[in-house]
Length: 558
Image: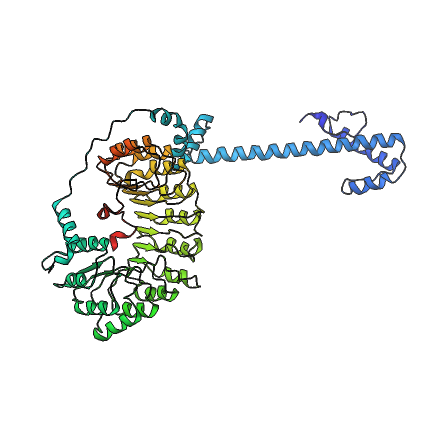
């Protein structure tokens, strides 16, 4: 600090060099204060200034007072600068001492280039992929005009087992017995017959013959109450482990269940898997009876059972909370939100599969606790049509559901590209991903495929309106294991994009193209020679390949 910055005791700014001169200056100042009747000290400086304004001062006094105020302000500023300097110096001294004490720690000043690299490293894989996708627009535009070799891989001939099963399904009325037929072939034959709508009492009698471990029927629309009672009573309930009676709405009623338990009070002691999808007459009371008679139950499918209420969830949680591994209550509109919904869900400790699709009561808060504490074993999850789910819920899925293999987030309007980032960064083992009717960007979906596409077997982009060339490019480059692909109503894709996908995705088995009007007849003829089963285009049968249906989330459990 310059000496001129320090206020002096005289108007001539006389320099003080010794203690005697300092004392003399103080005495002179005191005499002057006494002569001029000035107040001593600076504590009440503001008050004194106000009082002085109210009195009449001559010009000399006003000039002296103004000069004195200026010097006081300069002194305050100098003191502040001196304090800041001391603080800074002390910090540097302490920092140097700490670094000397811990010699293994070194602070290296980073250049702007290094800081840019560090910021780039802090970005997630999804963000880096998205940025690179935005930069490759020119590459896509140049390669889109390239001539791609026609698809020469011919469709493989079906196996003898597949041909035989189809013929048997079409002539089921001629079959007299299924004795000695293994369960997996019975199941395949039953599914083919269900697709043809020929499941009746006679077929069910064939399926329960010879005490099988599994009874599987996907289309039980024609069964009546008395028919189902007879079938359940005649089957070997002790050895029965899997019972699938989907679309049995007319036959599964309170009367059916009560009458069955009157005749067979022991119920199903060995049953582990039960599917009653579409049983719209099933009530909470009937479910309680079934649960009480099936102590070993591990997987239960109650999709579209509209008469069930929140009590059904409580019954299952109380009886199977520690043992149940698969639960589907999707589409059960009778299950409304109630105070104990989250606590009931929390009781399921070992779930591998959960479907709450279409439940209006599901939101971020309802499932947050379950994901945080009970989802470590979850491999299959469906939140389709849960309209209140947001990116926050997807963050919890990515954070806690590390083993997730199949995810269905169909028709969730509140999701953004951040949801895709959470999925790709957290769920490293995804095999099936359904993004139907969502508003994700073309770059976001492409970045998701760049990061996670290598493990995908199934991808559904039906009605994702922003799907475009970036997604097509990433599909062709990254999704080499893809077997099932749905691009229905993706109108921004072109023939060249589709040709690139079919050419590069060598494992592709089935492709859905409903709503595609941007293909010409020549390309359709080329597609007809492809090894891929294509459904949805004109001149292709809707029911041509029902045995190659798209596996739903949780299909491996039922």
